[in-house]
Image 1 (cartoon, rainbow, N blue to C red):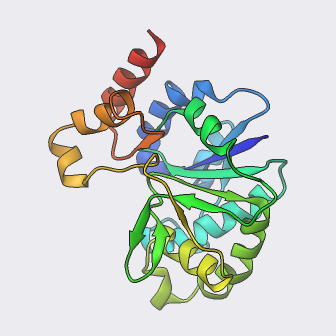
Image 2 (tube, rainbow, N blue to C red):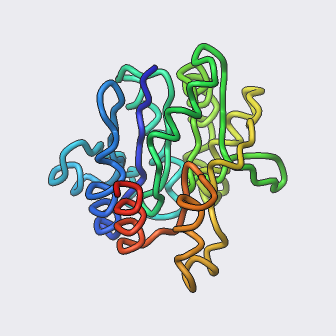
Length: 221
């Protein structure tokens, strides 16, 4: 089994990408692989970074297009599971491997933490996993609406979920991929630390640089 991890980043959050590189990304060993997907500038300066910058430039409303470009590029690489997360997410990669070993990479799979609004889709920051066949089907639907201004105002995770729903691929919910309330995490990063260290989660979201270092150091000691 081979996992390709893709990490959403942009020029303004380069410090977050650096935090990932100095902590949990170090645990991604062969045969597994990772790439950041960010801006054109980042792809020119940071190794293992794809230029997935939207045609009209970076912007939150254009993240569906950016993620579409990432999904297309991912199909040029060899992998069984694609795992996408944001650059402010800590991933216990060894636990991710153990988790995905329970699933058949030949199936149409979409795994993540469920949000229901108005249908079930995976919270994208915390991360979601897709099999290759699911990605191929996802891009077939995602390409139809990622450039539609009324729809690109939606988040990338919603858009991916919508594309998969159109392809009749339903989310498999897991509590192991997790995110705290953003306001709570901003006030107290201990919720992020506890998610990985005490609650045995695979991921936690809204993690700052110092917290990533603390979690990584604790796991490695």
